[in-house]
Structure formats: C-alpha cells, structure tokens
Image (cartoon, rainbow, N blue to C red; front, side, top):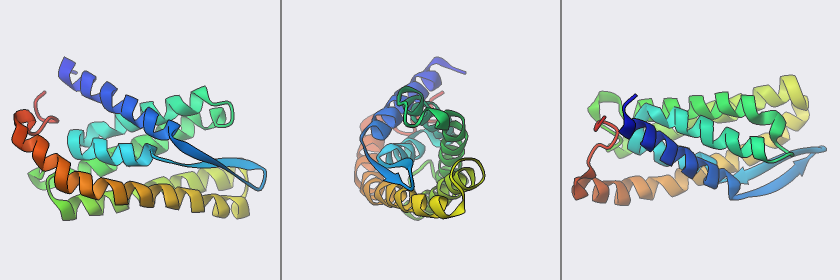
Length: 176
C-alpha cells in the first residue's frame, strides 16, 4: 500500500469511529442496539475512496465497539459487516469509472450497502445473540441508521463532492 492510501483509510476510519460514537443507545428485549452516524461515514468514505471504504468502515466501527463494554462482543461481526458494507458501496460507486460521481450509482450503492448491513446484523443477532424476534426488533434501529446515512450522504455527494473535485483534489482514491 502506498502512504497516501494508508493515510486516507486511516482518516476515514477515524471519521467512521466518530460517526459511530455519535449514537443514541436503545434497549430491545434486554439487548443493546443504537442509532448512529457510522453508516453515514461509511457511505461518505465510499464516494471518496471507493472500495477502501471497506477497510475504513471495518476499522472505525469495530474500534468503537471494542471501546464500549455494551458492544464489545460485536467487534468481529461489526468488522466483517461494516467492512463488507463499505467495500460494496465503494465498489458500486466507482463502477464504470464513475469514481463516486454518479448520483444514481451512488444511491444504488447506498441502498445495496444498507441491505448488506441490515441483513448482516439481522443474521448475527438471530443466530448468535438474541433470537429471531429480538433480531427483528433490532432491525428497526439498523433501518433508521441506514436511512439517516442515505439522507445525509446524498446532498454531500451532490454538493460537496463536486466542489472537492473542482478544487484539484479530484479522484483522491486514484491518486495512489
């Protein structure tokens, strides 16, 4: 890996950590969940650094879980689920040489990534942690978190990304 790539992954991992840190804890059926901005940070990462958002999301979100006793058991599932989410959103956003600049492609990426995250957490909750019914309840917070991510990231992709592209920092993911 080149230094620039490592720095960008680290920067966006930090943003994913802070986004997850900004959360509202919720208890469902004796189990903790939360609504947070970590998914928003992953979506933002993906439109700027492509598939490397997988590393950023995995590291940043799992680090939050590791540092909060309520969520410490989620470190490995979060690393995998948020890593896949970031990778998939970044991959789709950068398909066909669009570099995260196609609004339609980004929206599709956010939705697909959101589904990956929702299903990932549902499956882990169902089979490992809390069973089917509580896993279904916990999907509410995951859905809200994903919806917030889409709602916040669309204007960022539409307004801020073009400004950054014009500033000369164009295609930061490709300047490796």
